[in-house]
Length: 247
Length: 232
Image (cartoon, rainbow over all chains, first blue to last red; front, side, top):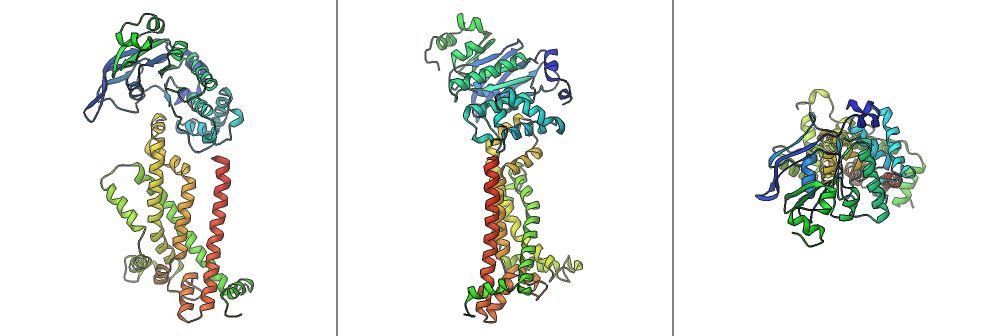
């Protein structure tokens, strides 16, 4: 990862984030179709909010995009050669049994960042996400909101070109939600492609640049946020926005 | 009074009985070295079996689990056959030396460390898997991370291994020979003194052995608690 030697903000500003393409992607398990087939192209500036009722396949779509799962059909590809640098923030952060700062240093070490620069990058990220005072605290005794901020800081130090977030605020209180949304905006300003799932309409209105709406394992629409919230095309999205129970 | 085991144990300690201290020192050296070697081999082995899928993996897990109950005399017999003059490793001239005792105890302790660490690492892996894949980690890179994050459990497993090594008598008796001043350890000395009918001395030695094991466990517990409080 030679890009780590370039100042982070400069490297991000120079290029627009890589576009993500789903080409007839489907996923099934034990003969049961869980998602797709779906095709779409995420190439705008985003952030892209993946919305839809529970069980629509939002998390599955994110895992396929991030490469945690392989599609049983179709292809996931990027507009750049190879795989972009990417990170994912989960609903329940998975943190190592180490101090907060050691969690970040581990992520940097895994990505072959030179040893000398790791501590500085880690402390800068902790400071940015308001965790400087907790750097030596065991990660797993932090509060839920702090843990999620640490997960975001861990993503931040990796300076990803693409960041996936899977319902990152669904287990948090309002103050913590605000902090997470602020962090998402910071990633976005740095030029990171954001792909985030949520079932919270208000949150989607606050953050979305475009919306990918799923129901029943199918992409029902992919439109700019303004159009999605004001003039939804699909019957499912209309019902979802109107607050009906959609299957 | 002289026949009281506690009195004997106490006087053995307070008199700085030279032969007793030699026996205690050898016991500790042999068992600690055996546990150290078994840990260096067994923990990565356990983690590897937890991480990789390969043909015969299931059989390997069953065998490792079964070997946790390997009778010490059987381990002793195997090592004896290997190291005896006519055996494949006879040229080493290892039989009836402390080295042979270490080898025998490694054979006893290794399956315990490997089998228990495999279970622990596999548990952790269920929890960490998605994050590891997200970070783009190879299985080989996951291994040190998992072993470090399992460190408190591994310490307990290490103690179980040390308990097995320091308590067994069959294996060290067979490959060490209980030679006075050379391969006599606490457990073989206790067997010998009991056989001679010197029960107070045997019991005194037993009390010293027990106290040592407790001391080591208490030390490990303290270290574990302190680091746990620091790193969670």
